[in-house]
Image (cartoon, rainbow, N blue to C red; front, top):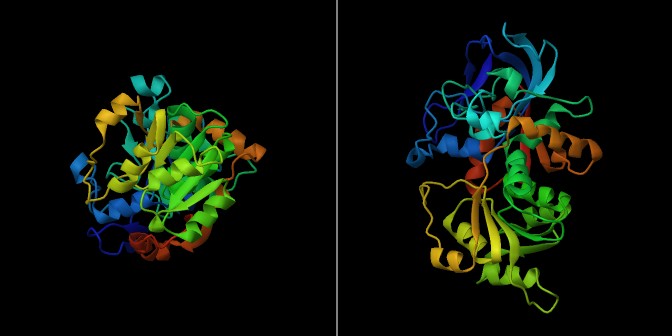
Length: 359
């Protein structure tokens, strides 16, 4: 089968023939019909994550947002059969550890990260293996297409998990979203769907316009603003520019400036939600005003994917039309295009979510 393989960090992925996967006793193999291209793939391609013991090995097949049809089934799999349409979370759990049993399979003690480690080859490929499929596979309703599910991917799921499960968000609260890439636009759309008011922050007017389409009530172009937190407080104010700040603020980019701006724009007892991963500029470390955070009783939260057992919530919202991950999909490409589309992310040259649909 054809697959996109990481040869050297920063060099174009190689599209080459590799052996077809075979299902483990507990796994299934799907024919990939769609797979999102995510900034996490870009981080992997760049060789980031060494500082967190999370560097993707060379020789890895990347891609972690697949949907497709089951074509082979392991002997111990009970819930799935050939021909079933499924999506696959990137955070793969075994289903039997303490975290999985308590509904937190996205941080499974023995979990695998699809497309990011050699034991879990990714989905920039014609076929992909899904381990512990009875626990991990998410069956697609008839009215949900593979492209929609790939659009949901890790970004939408991570944003939803963060805002719906990690943060204490109430309808009418103000949410600030710093960075309007794929995960940031997902956070805008999810926050709006959950009844919050949203202010979106970015450097690109095109991305801010997309944020408006997805539910942002206010936008801030940070390029011409000296004090972004102050501008946010004004945007969420009472009409006279008076505000204590956002109830929840999201760093969807992962650079020091956006992280600190996110914390600084919060009102007392506000909550910062970290979705973006750092680059080699920060190497996983960002200095924060801890004294001010203590005095103002601010909360710092993280979100990683979403437990497989909670995908039904999103699917029901999609069925009702409350959220539409497909609205974030701006481009469908072929597997051969993946190296160039990853390179475009180096200069933030993509808008919304791009999805591979031709393998």
